[in-house]
Amino acid sequence: MSEAERVPVEVAVGVLVERDATGREGRFLLTSRPEGKVYAGYWEFPGGKVEAGESVEQALARELREEIGIRIGAAHPWQTLVMDYPHARVRLNFCKVFEWTGEFQMLEGQQMAWASLPVQVKPVLPGTVPVLNWFAEERGHAGPTHLD
Ligand SMILES: Nc1nc2c([nH]c(=O)n2[C@H]2C[C@H](O)[C@@H](COP(=O)(O)OP(=O)(O)OP(=O)(O)O)O2)c(=O)[nH]1
Image (cartoon, rainbow, N blue to C red):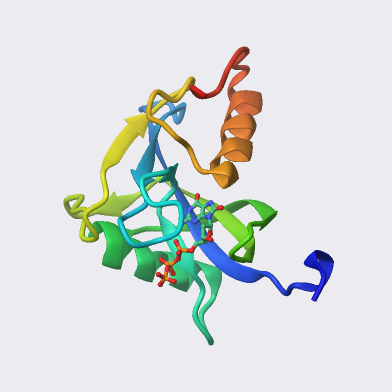
């Protein structure tokens, strides 16, 4: 099958963003991919594959509970992006999340980092780079968005 014909796997991705009292957006949460997964150790936004019968929002709530131990409030659909990796073609459904409850627990042995631009943790996953560019646009950030 050619690249263009591969049906994308739907992925729900949570972009947790801190907001101040005026609603201005601040730091966002990055997590590292656990050992044993493709791109282990690369930094991304938490999330995972949508299972049969689930909506993106349901998948996101489940993944964030399973992976980082929190319960989320509303998921706000933000951007979508299809990425072709050698291992899979994925459609990333990025949702912003501003409200959650519970303590963060890295239940798969990941690491977490509250980040702002330019992101200091590395390496970042290829699918993370466009998100940093969207943040840069929204925030009027000029210059690099992450370290190489
Ligand atoms: N979670 C997440 N996945 C991303 C991001 N950017 C990106 O390209 N991806 C890709 C990597 C993977 O190919 C796919 C997500 O699959 P995954 O392996 O994390 O999903 P999962 O937790 O359901 O994993 P599994 O049950 O199959 O082990 O999307 C991102 O920011 N977050």
